[in-house]
Length: 371
Ligand SMILES: *Cc1c(COP(=O)(O)O)cnc(C)c1O
Image (tube, rainbow, N blue to C red; front, side, top):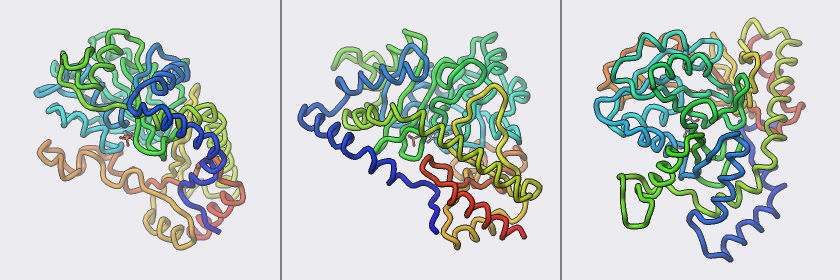
């Protein structure tokens, strides 16, 4: 049996006639950049995220960059964020000449340890940028309390968290700006690169709409130096076919997570490995199902690979130890929980079309390795 980490084929095959028709419509229109498909998708995304505005752009990375640009963040400024995330979380800060100020993670959720944030705030702090890692929201109520009183905006890296909820709010509706990615491995993936932002602030939305087209409201008149970061019509048309299925895909991921919990518990494996923590009053969308394997994680990964099971490590090197950030002066030992997580975590297949037979196979093989 083969169990890949992610298999897009079943999902894409099922939608193929609708996707073909959507692409044909765009080809027939000869309008390829922005336009009515993008505007239509933006309206549907704002509704889905329960925000006033959604702004399409070229990728999740650009969404983060645009969000920080909307707050005029640049040289001399500091942005507080997590070192345990995808690279873009920090690179968008340094690309603008600002400094990422890292705060370690909570070992249970892998999200920012909110108790450590306040001590890192200085007069240079221009934003706090939590990540809703693996599809579970950071503790935003607490962060909002610290940030709002000081007038510091919260920028959500919600790239892995479309539709995730914490308390009564949805990802993208919890801070000043939410940043999302349609990279194919996310819960809602494009057939190429794409991303979007959300906000409830009309002035910010207007600025973001301008920043994605070279900082102009009117063509050839530039108020700011923006980016060329537009969402193309073909991706928007494809995403409009997929969006109505997102909730059922997310529910299938949640069902798969529940099945893993049962299987791991039934086989008595919950001592040797730690299952993901689900926070109360939240909606975890399980972009990834990440277990913690304190001993021989790399050996287990290899063993599973030898048995046809795909896994991955998110992330093997925490951001403060990346070569390109050596100039920031961080050292090994600075963020012990992030460093431990990079040595111990392993993402298992969780995609919606995964079958319970495949899941049993995965857990059986893990049991075999541990025995
Ligand atoms: C995927 C991802 C991004 C970047 O999105 P792209 O669309 O690949 O540019 C940023 N942050 C996190 C946490 C991600 O998972």
